[in-house]
Length: 259
Ligand SMILES: C[S@@+](CC[C@H](N)C(=O)[O-])C[C@H]1O[C@@H](n2cnc3c(N)ncnc32)[C@H](O)[C@@H]1O
Image (tube, rainbow, N blue to C red):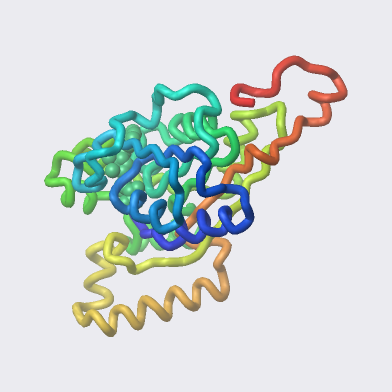
């Protein structure tokens, strides 16, 4: 992904398991899956995971056992899995909201996604060339033929989300119910993938000096503006969904597309 949220993904899932929102033997659909996701879910002891990816044998996945599927059109029934999770995939989709809707439709209890957050600070960083708007490195890693938008050789736009946008999107998906969303964010800039060429030249070739500087920058940013952090995770709690008052009082039919 543009900035690496690997640790955040595992922390969010571990926390959900500690809180008994996710149980070891729950059915979990892992979207955009790669060997990384297989390793994380194994470490967490999740026993019933189904892995899918549009290009399971590509350099970005390396998980040939994953099912081949396009996240925009999943051949899975509504509420077909307890949880639908995905790391660093939505921003590779040509229609990120549509892919998130599929995750929402398929999940009975939770949707967990780790992506990048849009914020005033990130926009400044992108303007200054310190953060990527298009992900050229992933396509280079894929030999120029994969790793980009919808798994193609066209570098994807790095679609960064805001909290407000996720909340509004979920409200549109399921207008008859109040569905809580939990958010997580932190700063982690300067990981290899995130380093644009101008940032590399700014920080120089000394790896240890670079690591120290990047560490200090992240520490400072997390101390003063963690909420705006570029690493962004959210958990959509369908398990806690409650009907909107007018749905109950008025006896209106239906409770949204994926109730
Ligand atoms: C940055 S990689 C992340 C892989 C893995 N989750 C990880 O974190 O290492 C993004 C993955 O999304 C997959 N992908 C891109 N567009 C997709 C789509 N429309 N449907 C399903 N998978 C897609 C790509 O094949 C790629 O493996």
